[in-house]
Length: 143
Image (cartoon, rainbow, N blue to C red):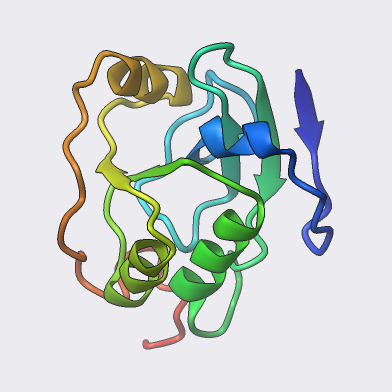
């Protein structure tokens, strides 16, 4: 099952959504590359790790002039997740995710499917400290 949401649309999330995990990606399916960045990834893939049902959401913070990590974290939380899987989270995004009580895991794998497999196998470590801020594609306009 694959559903794409408009960037500004905030759907009603059923209770089962808490079983979903979110993986930042560079595409729109399970064979897409996982993204090396969180706040400025192209898409968020929300996936049920047991059934592999997923939803794709374009990242509305991709081209933000600043605060992309916080905007991305807030978007992910509004769409309902039980865990976030990312290469790292900047200090502000980390605080938003942590304040919501959502666990964050360090991403391992080059495709979304590989990341989910590692999560299901219990191979991912918790992200217990934030990464550096302003890491990524240079979109933060701090040039």
